[in-house]
Length: 66
Image 1 (cartoon, rainbow, N blue to C red):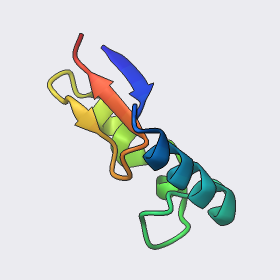
Image 2 (image 1 turned 60 degrees about the vertical axis):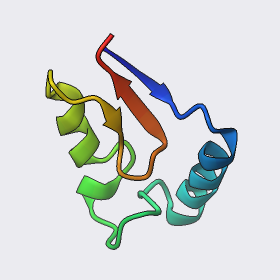
Image 3 (image 1 turned 45 degrees about the vertical axis):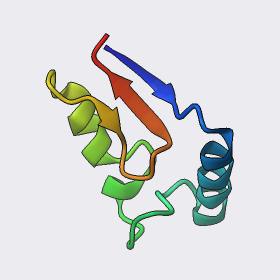
């Protein structure tokens, strides 16, 4: 298992800019609650799921199975 940044630099740049504006909360989610702080709770759970492969909600991170 490996977690990496999205290879699309434009997406990474846009999301990082959004994170700066929101104080570290996912810019793709409504509500500034602890669960939406990057790395969000949803993706943390997906990382723990041995069968999950894919991007987090905002597509900043990607989890691969290899």
